[in-house]
Image (cartoon, rainbow, N blue to C red; front, side):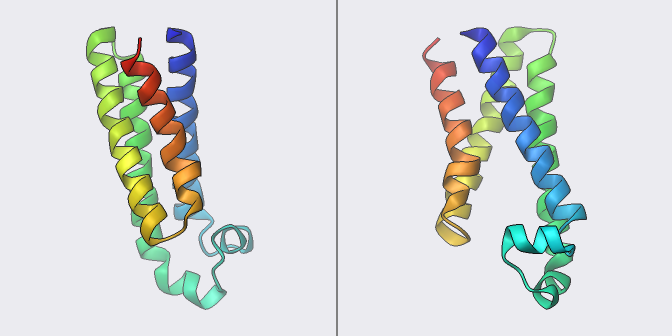
Length: 120
């Protein structure tokens, strides 16, 4: 079970590094605009905001990796739990205010991981 949890945490961390890349580097590119449904004009107007979002996603990923590789598993688990909760909150907010799929792509994997962690 611990291996499954660690793999899920790693998945969520990699996912958020992907969000960082999309929001910081692909936002104004054709592929990024297609993913986020933006016009070229809207992407250009919002690229600084998107880069800021991307940076925050990078911090969430870094926090998960910090917890995953922390020498003390007790402390590492608490760190991972904190960042997973942050991701769920951000995912719920994003799902309610921006795009419903954020609930499934961002919040759900983190929530599943949390539920497994607290039931071990």
